[in-house]
Length: 129
Image 1 (spheres, rainbow, N blue to C red):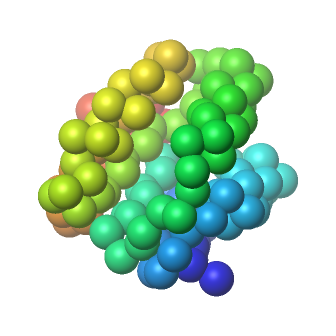
Image 2: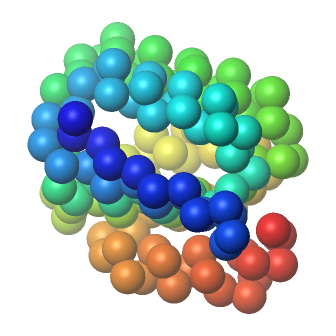
């Protein structure tokens, strides 16, 4: 399984680390878990630096549609999201997240997990929790 996650209900944080080849089913399983665990409002850290997507354009669109649906369902209750990517994927991921950034929630792309976590722990983000 290429996606590993930890839910810390004490600090309302979901941390996901990618390790290996990521396919559509892996992201669907992750999203099912987020919905089933009722943690849409938690802060989320997705570290994709150790993963590599093998999804085609249609599968990326499928994930985008699912995320849009979750955004509509959660509304303003959607928690902040920090995505960490390798240098070569930074602008591609930033562009895709910009397209998906419809909800009113903080969302940023980072190149380093430590900086992403610092941002998620910042007073401005924590004040939203």
